[in-house]
Length: 211
Image (cartoon, rainbow, N blue to C red; front, side, top):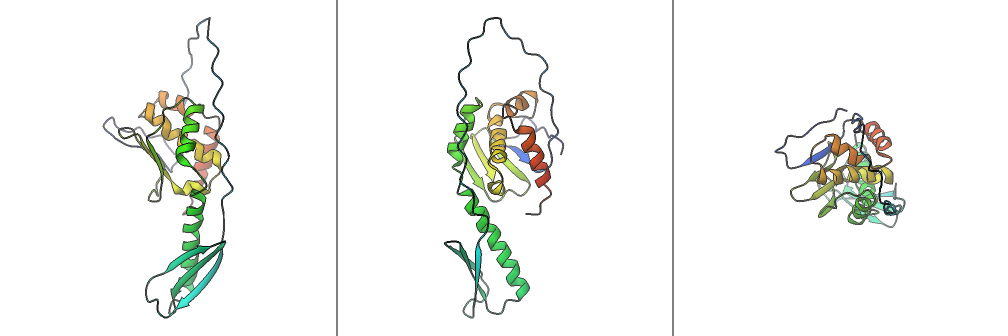
């Protein structure tokens, strides 16, 4: 999954689904003889509550319902209302689709993205965004950053992934606030996150998923 450098005129910087090739960090850094002690790092963000990964499904066939399908989560039961004429194959499709949507929505709710972004920015000495939110329309990217508005969008597909993977994508986008391109300066910021390479490998493996 090759690294892609965005042109200078671009306003948004995206983390795409394809894999990312590892970059070599700058080889040497001059260190003065007398160095003031570094401040203690900020604490890591707290782990998020475990997501609800599945629901019981109750299907209600209605003669009054002609074309539309609706779903409502009541406790741990997903109640699905469908037209009475719908075939079993269509019913199975909508059960799977609505379950997927509600699992994603419920998983996303466990994250306080603004709070998490602030904690990660402080811990790894990165700039903080003005806005960060989940996005449900990102099918080819894990995240995007628009430096001009200091806005970050995170694909809600990530909501069901482990915390350390979500944190990597947030750090990746935070780094774009200070380094808009994908040069060595950008990757030096990203690799302040200790699990960067591991998370990249995880995302490469997941990029083939149809969902």
